[in-house]
Image (cartoon, rainbow, N blue to C red; front, side, top):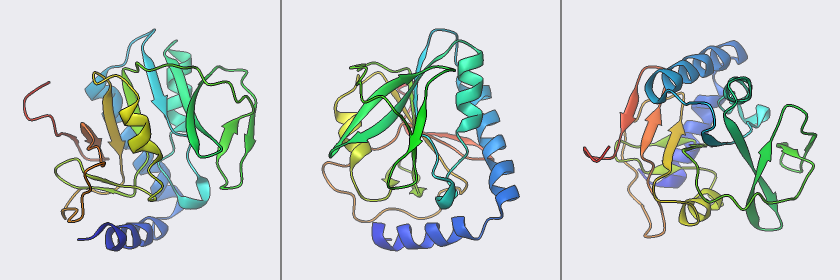
Length: 191
């Protein structure tokens, strides 16, 4: 299917989830992430902050766990047309931007290029790691500017069952997809 069709289909499927269903699925996705990757104290994780109105995966569960385990947490912030990475702490102040995304008040880019994991928002991911997001390209830009060793991990309520037909040359596939039922690796035995 084309990205535009997949974007429409999976936006509707996500909207059909109740708030309770979305939270329970988010908890299972979180559990699968922790069991599979076993993040450790001192590691660096870049994780998006969910947009509640879009019923995105509740990554606040992840963030709370990481901070409690002394895992360093970085979140994205859009400044102008650029995505920057800001390290957050228990006492970081947040504000809601024009898109309804909670972001740190600070505009100070950490300059960090090496993360152990980047937990990536998406609407859909196919069985090859091709991601369908909101179409702005912020994460493709992020992926181009970070270490190749970083594990790019998508999180989604839905298992992949269709292929993305219009993959572009600048699209960077994910390394893993975590759903409520499984963790898929797209690394072809390179782990």
